[in-house]
Image (tube, rainbow, N blue to C red; front, side, top):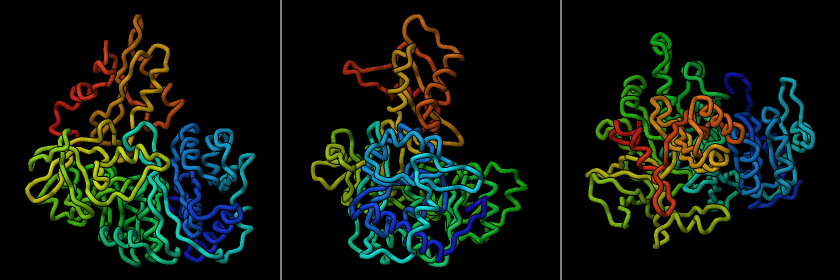
Length: 502
């Protein structure tokens, strides 16, 4: 762990994972049951996942920046029966028991800084430490059930079938990802992102399975990232484009002093990378950048190497998982170079947990072709270029933000008549959150009201979902059906850009 320096050996990992497995079995959880993990980047997070993985459970890492109401929604929606959290999240965790009556067991990880376990929670050290370190009987492979904003206001669990294999085996899915990302046994893998995100969770899990050293940053810092590469001889890492931007903005002497000679592969995804940023990173790190485009749903995937990207700048690659179809709003194929909705045909073995209607809405009539709503085009060589976001999704620093939650909250404010939340250009984050608000008659929008609205949002939602700024308008553009026409609003802020990607 960095920068704390806390280390965990494979022997310690193995013993503690078995102890967690015994806790879960003791609680009565069986294959297909669910648990949730709500904490910052912490070794216990990986141990809790390992215990779930060897007892056949679905485990859900919960965004550690969510409010109590938001965390409770995920816990309840996932039907989690055990929740593991930490004293660092005690303020939010203390509110959860009253909001989640179906949870059987609450476990809190102690820290060494004097924090204490909240009343109603079991101590991780006492509970896990009391268990045997041998394997539980009849181990079964479990799996993560990650949450994605998708195309509705509330996030939904993305459920994939479990592999019917023992946890000592490696699934064909993991082998496929490892091969695509060029991961290898004995590598030194640096993970700079929150482990509740899909890509960091998957990549660190693969690194452990491949007998490799995993260096996990507790918080991303660009200078520390470079220092860790040199200190540990990092060979592989996965980042989001915002991290590239922040490394490039470091002082020249810091960048010049960085030893990145050990790097073999840098993988990036989560958001499109601005062309100038990627050009500079390839110049600095060499042609070792691998980019893929995929959703948590896993319904499709594209991939591109640095040499291919240099020949098709701005592309996110060609499909490696299923056929790509670019269709217009009527479902007709778009010509080469013409933008439309991106559909993938074939890899559709996911479902939205306990939501068959939403699952059906993601498919075409053939049941085999699905989309997450992104817009782009194919060139004559079959390379995909993304030109717009999902219908209303905001991607800020690689984090998906669905604005409806924020809009629904804003309209409860006494002086707000209507509200739209959109993504506007931000050179560092790609997009930032902005609210455009229509006030009730007689109320004037000013700096004080803007600050009040931002503060109101921050009282109820995770900060990354809250607007950084608020604009006031006389009337929002709504269609006669009541649908908000966000394209008109967004165009005002994106008019100077050729695409919706900074």
